[in-house]
Picture 1: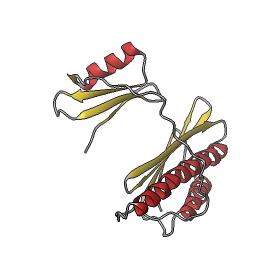
Picture 2 (picture 1 turned 30 degrees about the vertical axis):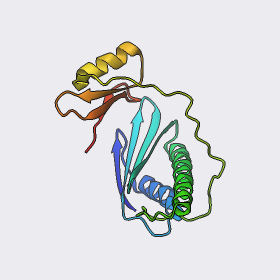
Picture 3 (picture 1 turned 90 degrees about the horizontal axis):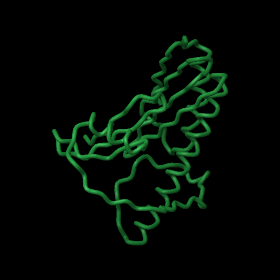
Picture 4 (picture 1 turned 60 degrees about the horizontal axis):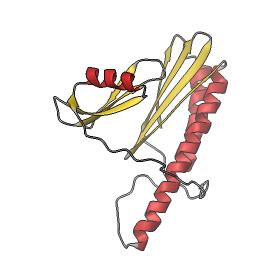
Length: 182
């Protein structure tokens, strides 16, 4: 793993850098081969609270977690636990998909193979509601206004300029984000 660690309102000391690399580096045990991906870590200290945000882009999936605590070292420990849960959940999905594909005699190109221990077999995903709606062409600003009027945290819309399906969402810091396809 290649670490890209930056601090906002907090200096990234060698001790802090070593702790982050040591803790997050342990996630490599979930993979058969060492990862050559960049791990983006943002350390933030705001209003007496320490926040760590970690993003690990993998083939076909992005593992991301954020945690806030009074102590930066405790926040690091908590974010690693979140990342481990996400990796185990994703690995379980891959194993189930692989078994299903093998039963159908399909061969597919897979992302880096994860080690077979630490599998959560009891993970069950229940979709309890499905919504269908027409996508209205609009720009991102109008989509944010629609989202706010509905009181939602996200809004799916058709971008009037590109005709692609986009998503606007409210971030934890109160600002907005836009997700668009490549």
